[in-house]
Length: 620
Ligand code: CA
Image (tube, rainbow, N blue to C red):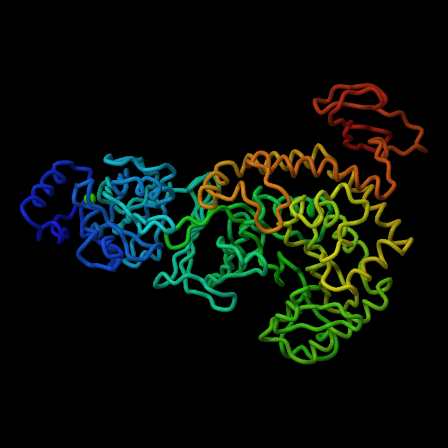
């Protein structure tokens, strides 16, 4: 404790000096110089004030006086402790009236060693209403010492806090145990001068801190943050793109990269649709599936909700793995790639785009906007036109059809609204992928609900393709081409025996639901929309569990729908070769022999051996 730093207390009247004595008698309760948002509000006039409801009122031991900031959000009050202290406990009391109780919910305590709090880490988040006339306490699980500590009020609360307390002891501490809001990684971002991201073009300089592995792992690096997305940007819970100054390994993502996305999932109340689709993409054997994981996000001390931290779709050896072009690559072999493009309904809002000969709008994602040269632009358009005209030769059907199945299985209206494709150097073939953007998939779009009652493919629904020419392009493959249709059934048959079945998909949903449980509770405190239709929601299901049930039930029926659509019969015995005369031996997963046929077995997973062949089989 550093009494000399306690400038505020030492200059006050006698009654306040007595308060110091009382504080000093408690050897854990910390004192320091009071710091905080300078402008407070005088509620009697609603004008800003520097004398009424000030920061000092949060440290005067009087539960009837409170700090209220003039600005409504991102406002705070705290202490400069003079030297680093490990905080072991915090206390708080809300503004002493009915308005105060709720205004501490999602209030956040932070610690920092930089005066501007750029390096701040969370200490504790309040998740319950405050108790009027009482101080509530919570233990802090953070082994690191901080000189600056503060309480940041939740959104739109004017901070409104009667008392704040910090307990602990002097010391630098260590980073062995940091605080995570939930079991998920916590991503906390602090921007320079507290500036809030406001568009898709300007990065706000930031310190980006990610705490994971139950608080035992930390990444804290400078970078920038901006908004991202199209329709999803229209919601108060904004999607963001973060960009580190230097390439970073983030969590367990395979890529080392500067750019990462924070997907907001505002219209997706299960908070899992993209992650589920990415898992399906992996099962489908796509060459590259974007990395994605659920995280809790804090911006400038304000809790923002449950997000998905995902790859940025870009060229990288662990993302879209094609040759990255340079502006000098303007002829010969070098001009041939690689190119990353997006068939994109919003292409005409982009800098670098073209319309194909038949009218498909295409955004060029790589080479980047600011690097691409005319030769490259002309080349990729010409090659795309060639592919569009003669897809039998220039489209990789394998990735196209797998991507198609993911789109239809998930019932994603956006599959051909936005479709990534890429072209390697020295290769004229266009590959489809990666998959991206599933927030209105899995029965979450009122325009196509209920999906399984429709006999036609979902991509043919009005408004779900980037242009009529794109719909025609897909029709020509999956509706009118016998060879492609046969390949589609072959791929479906393969994946039906490799994870695309109701049991396995249900298990994935179950596991994501468990993983997201604590985070969804916080998220819907911040965004109380569970009973409101937002974005394209067809229904309100009333609870998180019911929202997830909707997805689970949809998927079970969708697999059957797809079987029917392709006139495909899944027997569970299909991989056993009927021409193979070797006897069939069936075992359960514990290795117990269960006989020589699947016909009479109870539901479950079995291992079937026939000659040299071994398969896992689900009996439904
Ligand atoms: Ca007070």
